[in-house]
Image 1 (cartoon, rainbow over the protein chains, first blue to last red):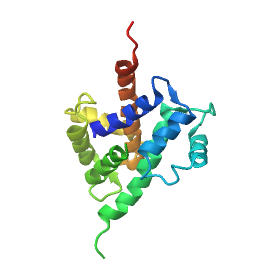
Image 2 (cartoon, rainbow over the protein chains, first blue to last red):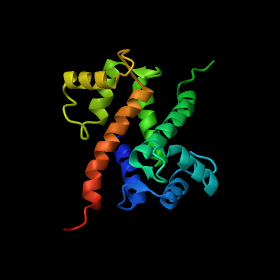
Image 3 (cartoon, each protein chain N blue to C red):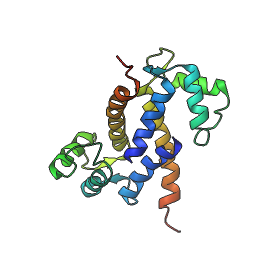
Image 4 (tube, rainbow over the protein chains, first blue to last red):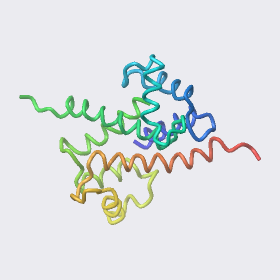
Length: 92
Length: 92
C-alpha cells in the first residue's frame, strides 16, 4: 500500500516537472497516459478540460496537489463502488 | 497509476472483510501490516487508537472508506513533501 501511495505522489511530481501544480497540457498528458481505463473520454481534450475546471477549486487554471488528490479520491470511490460489487456480493 | 488506486481500494475492502467500515482491530491490522514504514509508532496500539479517533469524523468508532481516504491523502501529502525535497531540489 505504501508503494501505491508513493506511485500516486511520484506521478504528480513527474507530471508537474518541478512545478507546484499541473498546467493544462501536463494534466492532459497525465490523464491520457495514466487514466485511460478508469476514465472515459480521456482522448477528448474538451472532456479533460471540463474535468480540470471541476477540480480547479481556486480557479487558477492549474491543478494543485490537493486538487489532484481530490481526483484520486473520486477515482478510488468509483473503483470502490465497482470493486465492492464484484468482490463482496454473496451468491444469491 | 490506476493499479496504485486499485491497490488502495482493495486494501480497504480486504481489511474491512465485507463490512462498510473498519473496526478498531481491522484498522490496527491494516496500519501495522501496511503502513509500518511511512508511519511511526504503528506497533503502539494506543498511538493507532489515537490516529483512528483523529480520522473518525462521525465518531462512530469505525473508519469509513471516506475517512480512510483522508488518511491516504495525509500520507500522500507527507510523502509529497519528502519526495518534493528529494526529487526536485536543484544542486546548490
